[in-house]
Length: 305
Image (cartoon, rainbow, N blue to C red; front, side):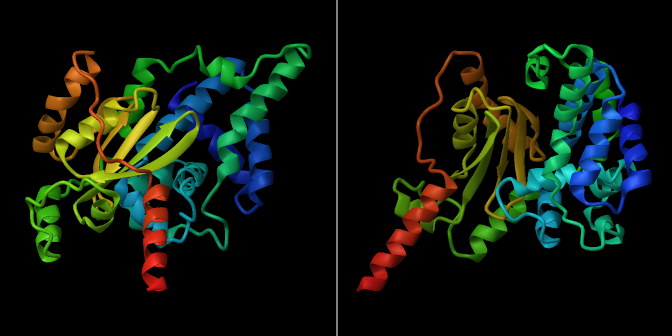
């Protein structure tokens, strides 16, 4: 399946079900896909995944939050599924200018469309049952052996509007100075120090179908060790204290890093880890839930006094 065929399947469904509930739209999407060969159904899901990852950007995070769609850690992923479900024009316009979503009519529709991401799974099962009712194969098995053609991946990436570059280092320095943190503040060594630090990074790791958020002190070495300590991640996103994109990865390989100076510093530590010449060094890096729990417990202890 090509990227153009991918968008055509969505257009076909939207022409007849734009105002229907999400469960009905997902059923129609699965029915549309079930008309295609099994290999095309697998490709459809792989293309969906590629477009969803290319929309994993901080400017869309901000817009998702502004629209009230990101209610949970997984909400942003479901928001990107909804974005794709509205078709190519809406998707491309949003990546060019997230505020373009203000002009998209959704009239109370939920902006988190988790079910859409399961369309290919239902279609694959239905198609396979018609071909061989005794087969125990699944889309998960097929995804383990089939990959998109490199030219298809390049065609997809070349068409997607790039995120506007920000002067991230300068703004980050302004943020730290404005709040009196100091640019050369010592790195936190305890949960208490990390909870009080301003120059932190947030790391989001997708691994084994789950997304986990971590918090750590924002240095190139820590970023590199963070990536290197998650060798089985499907992708990683790192943002700064203002939730602006620092970098993201495919696996443990950097995909996007707007700050080229930072990129070179991260690579200096990361490349030896990737080549097996060094191991990722441990550092203070709790999950966001762990840090929040610590802060809540600390606040409760203060109230007792």
